Length: 194
Image (spheres, rainbow, N blue to C red):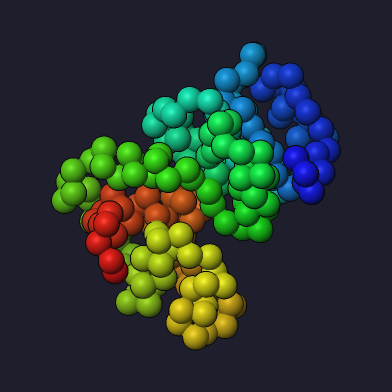
């Protein structure tokens, strides 16, 4: 990908895990369907066994909600489709490297609409503060940390602290997971401005 140096390639999931351990990349672009070990299992292995694991973006040709859920559960920071233009895939990798989480919009919409509103459990026991709820709502609209900081007229460090608190209190692995929780619990309702 233009502007994004690749440090290695792998022919299958077992080799992907081995190469990632050897080369220690910042981000692994992991295909879902690979011989010997699929990308979801490879992601689980890589993230569970590494002291300083890379971030993982799972990529596939299939719009399969099960893959999305499994990838997020395995700890992936992003999920993209191969049919996206190469510059968008490269941008997703750069965004994940910068600490963002990426999920293609159709997958997020389907995950949200797959469960009727009101059927989800309440937010986890550790309730968010009012400001943390506001930050989570803005995260759900797709705003980055700098955009949230500008919206609240606060420092980027303050926003990072709020985002960290949100992730911790929700038990979320990353921003995407936190946004899914926000939708599932009804804190954020699709199509309704916060």
